[in-house]
Amino acid sequence: DSSAAAVLLHEQGYDVVGLFMRSGESEASCSVKPASLLPIAAPHRQGCCSAEDAADARRVADRMGIPFHALNFKDEFRRIKDYFADEYLAGRTPNPCVQCNNWLKFGKLWDFARQIDARFIATGHYAQTAVQPDGTWALLAGADSNKDQSYVLFGIQRALLPSILFPVGSSEKPEIRRLAREAGLRVADKKDSYEICFVPDQDHTGFLRSFRGPQETAGAFVDLQGHVLGHHDGYERFTIGQRKGLGLAFGEPRFVVRIDPQSKQVVLGRHADLAVTSIQIHQTNWLIDPPQSAFSCEVKVRYRQRSESCQVLPGNDGTACIEMQSPIFGVAPGQAAVFYDGRRVLGGGWIR
Image (cartoon, rainbow, N blue to C red; front, side):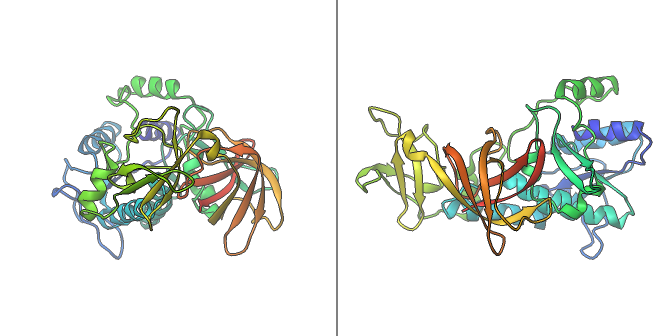
């Protein structure tokens, strides 16, 4: 998608510069001057959190004849990994993709863009920006509802919206693949990645134990009354709403309804016990003028879930209370709650 975005911009007459974020996992790295973020050296072949992705990006840039920089963001990726580990060990379910967008793609990469006097930063996200009738800029859902990524972009700074380009956001995925084929890009039929880049095998518990070492997180499964139902190897293995992989058999489905890192207990209940009508969030980020009073909208509490009607009551210090019109299930602390008015993203915050 990023390669197709580069092709589209190149065809539209933009002077395109290719950027690739390296996590520093490989020894063959491109070092970066701390003061300026400008690369000191960039070997033609480099590793990254995915060496294959790095090589693909380089080949696309070479084919298009555009400059290419691979930036070593090892320290910045360490911040993402620390956040990921801290959240799981606190009994929450993190969303590193949101923080990567906030801190890196629309943070450090934008810093680099300004160093080279770039006017815009462009990515392959399926989202859109547009000027509204009142002259303000808005973040909108992508045209392809099956690929829309606006949820993971709620945390970008509102002031940055005029400087962001989402070239593929107005198209559907099959059209983007066709464009890439016509441009002769070997990545045209590359499978979409849904993995966390630093957990490529999706074994997040294995990553945590490798990254932080053994943790004293084993404990008991209990029911809502506190009766012990069994034992688990670590509460970081679970998320709210989880049913599979519990290692216990019951006469009816049981779900994770609460995780208590203090007691190390994982509380199990029935599906009805997951119902929530009120959600507390903090660290809100608004892509509209910050609301001063209650308002109605729709909210998503997981990336792939549909939006639901609600009323939002803004609080002090970046907090808000969400009152659902109907009960919602599987609300996990640590995930994002993102507000929509139709296709427009209003803002969002982190579920407590």
